[in-house]
Image (cartoon, rainbow, N blue to C red; front, top):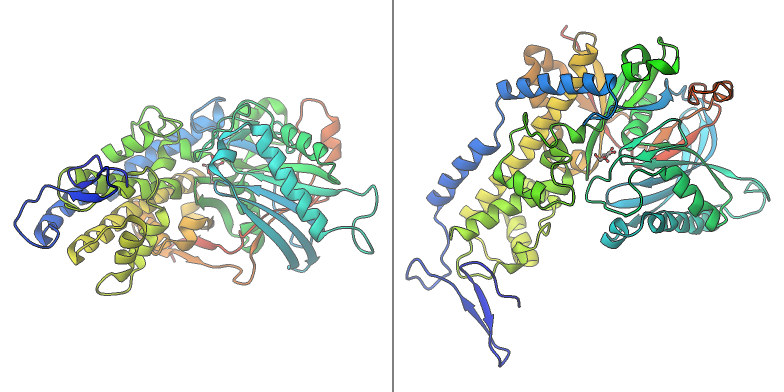
Length: 523
Ligand code: GLC
């Protein structure tokens, strides 16, 4: 057992025997634990650190709105507001077989969707969990892995024979690549930077669609990459398919980001392309980067600063680091470690298991908050099973309250981002729906309600009619309908335009299983 660097821990003797060491503050036979009052005092301190007032939220919204405008009008901005070349919405009448690959922050998903028209479909999907090595090794290797998974999937689920792939026939593939890519056309995407802890080498600055095509060739797959799309853009299109009032889509998962439909006339930085100013184009905001480097607008605590400094991308994704599933558990772990260092928690117990960065999964926060028992048995389980630590009820209540503060701050900050798009687009009066998806949104208890509460704090009375509902309880996929206007392709300097759904693609599963915020005007 490794020795703890803290006041309490253990030493291993040459005989192999382990001795617990700790500084006792009182002469009791039991392990020394912090009192209820001590925990309550500490909680008050964290409450003031992690609580966002409505006034502060409105200030953030104002700065956020300006940042979004800047990204639309100037190139190379921190929040890049990426034009996606996805124009307009699907009709819902599309049919056919479509292959989709979804490279997210945690998993790789491959799926085949058969759209049968009138909203009916069939889906087959496989999910692979990505290893830490795959996230950090050479990028081409990562795409090779994606192609390999696709090959296995195609061989297992498609094969040859009647109604299957004929020799020489290829399947269109949509690639949901959930990282910031600047696009010149739909089947192209230069990776601006990795986010969510990825760091695969030889990839940033390169066209990932080209890299992936190389891997498809290597594995001799009968597949044609027709589109590269961000998960937010996919969710936007899919949510609108389900609920035509949808104007914005947000992902609250390992990362956090949003997309919405913008008027081409308001995307100043692409004016020179001569696209019909009356058209609408989806914008992938990449809002996770808001307030990066300068840290002027967001309420960062010292724990957030440590998360940032020790990340593989210090300074970057400042907004995302306060909100997304990748970081919330780590923020809570850092607070607990500070209290261990101060001798408040776990005296006499070996805390080495808790000292490993990122060992405290965000799912634990969600479990702690949803523990229905008076004794908080779930929390006992988490601490004993994963960290070999004993807790008192007062400590468990404190952990739960802390999880609530961190989760609530994340939800309220998310509300600021949504409010910025709503204000900028003037949706408050006319009303709109926001499609929301991702593990944090779907699995974290109360997250959606807290976003709503946050929107009401920002907008006052007008936020009272913010509602959410699940638009397609039985559905479980994202449909991305993409078309390719060939006439546009022939015109030089104008990127291919997607508007008539003649090439259709399903880009990602597990996306219609989402909730939608309904932003209703006051009656
Ligand atoms: C990160 C990525 C972004 C993605 C989001 C949600 O913020 O940069 O592209 O949409 O995570 O997955």
